[in-house]
Amino acid sequence: MGCFSYNLFSSSPSCQVPVTGSFACQFKTPPYKQLPTLFKQKRKQFNGCQRASRVVSYYALKTPPYKPNALEPYMSKRTVEVHWKEHHGAYVEGLNKALAKSDILYGYTLDDLVKVTYNNGNPSPEFNNAAQVWNHDFFWESMQPGGGDMPELGMLEQIEKDFGSFTNFRNKFAETALTLFGSGWVWLVLKREEPRLEVVKTLNAVTPIVWGDIPIINLDMWEHAYYLDYKNDKENYVNAFMDHLVSWNMAMARMARAEAFVNLGEPKIPIA
Ligand SMILES: [Fe+2]
Image (cartoon, rainbow, N blue to C red; front, side, top):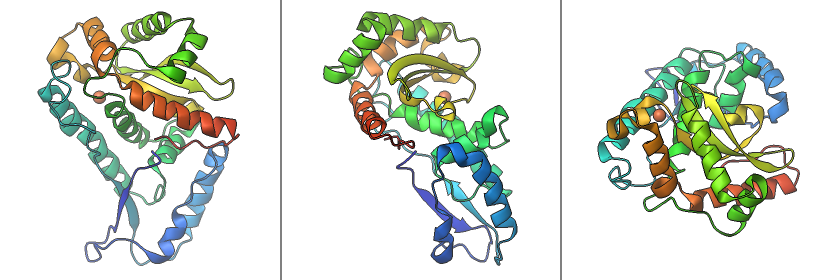
């Protein structure tokens, strides 16, 4: 994500210091449509780079913006702790281990790392962990204590314009979540070209940023997200998210940010 912070260290055991100086030139954010080409260029660039030690980038496990018990009784402290520390944490650890094997993917923002490793639908081995880190960072911030109910003002107006009514949107979101077979995610996204809101689902780790949609909220439909609290009652889980957890405040902030960049014709939209 745009605000994601890196901890950068040399992988050489004798040189555990933050990377500075000439390596700063690697922090480029390539235009989205040129990513596959730039991926190849970056490979050539690193192959020809003269360095004393291999350098990789590491990603941190971001902390949810509330305490683990803050979403109770709709999402238990135990669910948040297990989901965040064990599942989300495992994706971060898996990503860092994968990246440590090669420096080809050094220096990308997490957004661009996800897009590059998606590789136009032929994902590289790093994709699943990278995308799941992105999806979970986004998911925790899609909820808030005392959330749920309805959005207000422009967000509500846009939903009513694109779905006919808030009830229609809610029904479509729930139906999409409950008809998702296996593990995956349901999303409210802003379609960049029209622009209009749409509900989409993705399987496993796939995230809509890989085809250019702008996520506004997401809901984790992997079993680890709901089983401790709701067992197999996914309908109850989805209703609890809609009625008590979803952060329309964050959705409105993301929407305002996205609209500003879309209206400016900016092809790369940083996600709050
Ligand atoms: Fe999850």
